[in-house]
Length: 396
Image 1 (spheres, rainbow, N blue to C red):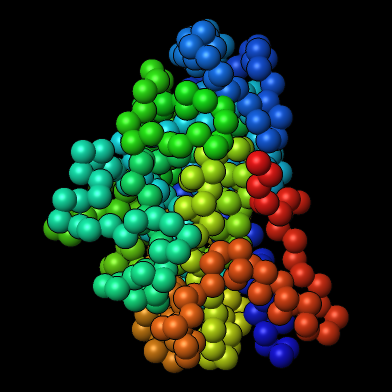
Image 2: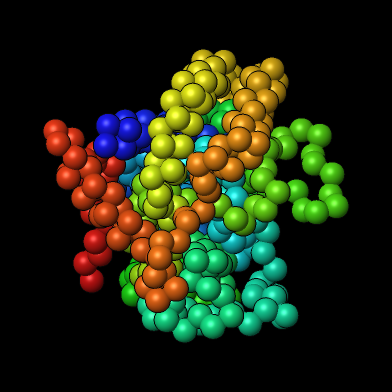
């Protein structure tokens, strides 16, 4: 029990800090639109859409600000405004057909197995022609005939492109975003076409093909190297052999789902996010492995994070030696997991099914998080860690 409590504390500390790993011009006048934490610019009619398009296209040239597309934990007020201290000048919900959401950025085994990322998407071939997708619904897990419940954790059930939020930020804040996302050790800064939704009502269905005019926004992009491809000479990242294997933690998914609720992203997309199944420790061997692994590696990872923050330049970029050191550390982290911990303590990337999982589907993100809090409450003298001020519950 003591090992369980320590593992929970170490896990929480590691996850909170590792959520920063995954890893433009100057603002002189305030934006005309000041967002609230839960809402921002939202089109309601054709004239408003035209005004919005004009406003967004003038961000860099006339106001000297940066448009930044967020899709993962930066959707959350707790992470973006709280932990990172970013103060967006405005924000708008968007659809990005050329990208799709992935969870293929490695974190740390047993704690934060992976983080959100994006990959290129072909709107004309999603899902691929040779794939028969399982229709999305709350009852989908009951009808999986060719994919067992333990093999599918629902991350690939969205086929309408990336949905996220474009924040208008100052160049100083954008540099800070880059610094807190790994200092350029993983991500490239790219420009993508973003399409505002034609309605600010989150109950409106997401179109397969957007019907509004696009604008360009920066986003941080860390594509996985495909089989047979050579890794990029600069800006490459560490990746797992099977980039789609790992499951994100319940804590990390909750930041994303809370943020989607706070930003009033489409309900359809929120339902998809809430249905993604998180990594869950299910055996005593995994709990012991979690305790030992995080005790060994968490202090070293924290040290690397501190170096990235301390040595980042005015653009948020870490020096090359810090990038190389971070890459070497994470290679060692995962090397020790593959070569020793996984065989001895069990899977640290994907949930090991309990007996009866063939009949009872694995827990959803919200259920897993609630069970984790219940475990903490049942431990004498242990209080649950609160990771968000909001429950993420949606009110229609």
